[in-house]
Amino acid sequence: MNIIPAENYNDLSQKAAKFIIEFVQSKPDAVLGLATGGTPEGTYKYMVEDFNHNKTSYQNVRTVNLDEYVGLPVENPNSYHAYMYNHLFKHIDVPEGGCHIPNGMAEDLDAECKRYDQLISSLGGVDLQLLGIGHNGHIGFNEPGTSFEKRTHTVELTRTTRRANARYFDSLDEVPTHALTMGIKAIMESRQILLIASGKDKAEAMRRLIKEENISEDFPASSLQAHSHVTIIADREALSLAYNYERRA
Ligand code: PGA
Image 1 (cartoon, rainbow, N blue to C red):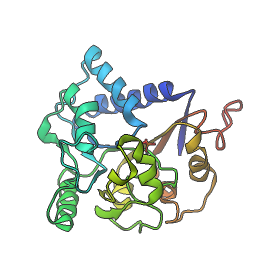
Image 2 (tube, protein in one colour):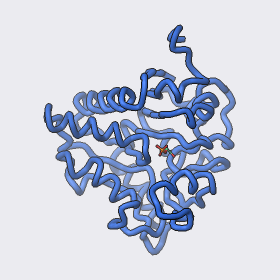
Image 3 (cartoon, rainbow, N blue to C red):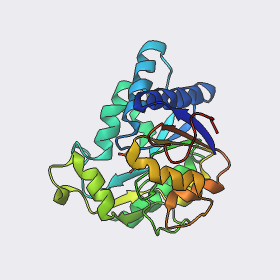
Image 4 (cartoon, rainbow, N blue to C red):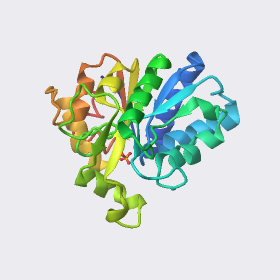
């Protein structure tokens, strides 16, 4: 895994945006796998800033998002549809029809998962997958214990994850109990992966990801150790237990 250390959240956001922008510049028809959550907000902000100043075009880019809550309509500001539209899609020139997110309102969730898998393969797979990491090592919404063989599937969210995401809702009770997520199998098939992490509360997860060589379904992010093209961009706090800034070890 290639580690790019950042000083703080702003620095990490700039570095991650630069990474994605350069990727798109070198492959203007890239399929980007995108993520939601607090961490990518700054990355998207700098991508938008670059679009406004440098006009990096996303006209031929297609995007597939990792996950979506079950039961939140797209108009709900906490849906990942709304998140992506508000933080990125409405600000750049990516065509609306080229942006894909699982439909958490589908009547038949199993059929929706199959449709999403077929869509990803019809696009030729993901060229660059952006990931955050949960405190429990989840990637996408693949919680500990999820089989690494799964493709898109419905998950029941753990209490830790619901609590971590409750900050966006009025109360914990309002956080959906289920979500649709791309599986580890599909994430691992991405040609490149960029994982971003910020803050002290991610330090232990980053230690397990970087320092432990034990690939286990108990810690979903450990699957990435078997991927040959992973870049991690994280800040000093997130890397505090995993990386020696002084030695750049
Ligand atoms: P966060 O979430 O960016 O909001 O910390 C990351 C994740 O849970 O994958």
